[in-house]
Amino acid sequence: MKIALMDSGIGLLAAAAAVRRQHPDADLVLSSDPGSMPWGPQTPESITALAMAVARAAAVHRPDALIVACNTASVHALQAIRAALEPDIPVIGTVPAIKPAAADGGSVAIWATPATTGSDYQRALIREFATGADVTEVPCPGLADAIEHADEAAIDAAVAAAAALTPSGVRAVVLGCTHYELVGERIADAVRQHGSPAAELYGSAGAVAAQALRRIGAGSASDSPPGSRLTVLLSGREGPLPTAALTYAEGRLLQAVSPAH
Image (cartoon, rainbow, N blue to C red; front, side):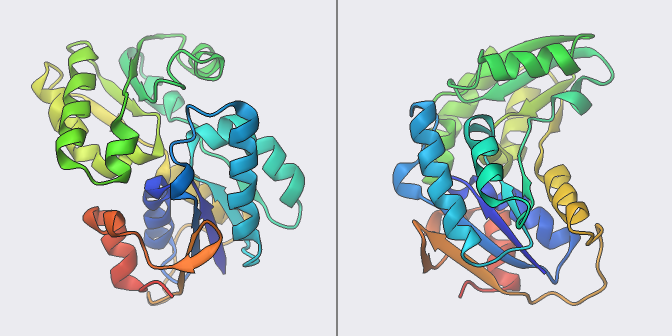
């Protein structure tokens, strides 16, 4: 079994690690194009073209499923990718975890890139899934870029700035960019220190991984031993995991279980 994941950069690590935990024997293909990251400021047409190139590079390796592990690409390019690859390769998009976060009502903050914050896409999700909640959209300029480059000072500054914009007493914080899940504990600590001690974080990696495994009939657990193959594609060419990826627990997990070929 082989699962491919795609993103502009290392935001795909969270979902890849989730697949590895749920099905340790799955081969993984990680396809990205760090040189074009971030995709958010690009036009929808450019995002679609960039995402298609990354998706097609992954498809060459004949995966059983492809996870679009990027909120921006899921918004702008998911339909095009599905039209190009399905039904041969099931394509699973990423949606911010607004529905589970807002299920119990109360105060919810959605951290997202400036391009996603206030977008028609995010507002539609809020209308559909969070009508009973008090929702605050929190833009996080520079956070995804800082995470991509493992710039500790820039991460701390961006997280602190977003935490300061998050209302005190929020019950839930939705991580609306896949990169953010890599620093989830730091985000949680910052939000709690800014007056929300009971805040719970909601990411999408675990649910997306489970959905991909369901689509191919693999289930969500395996008794097989770990040690499967990891293929890393950088702009379509095989290479090692980026150095920045190894600063995060998810990257180290993937490298330790199956070093990149």
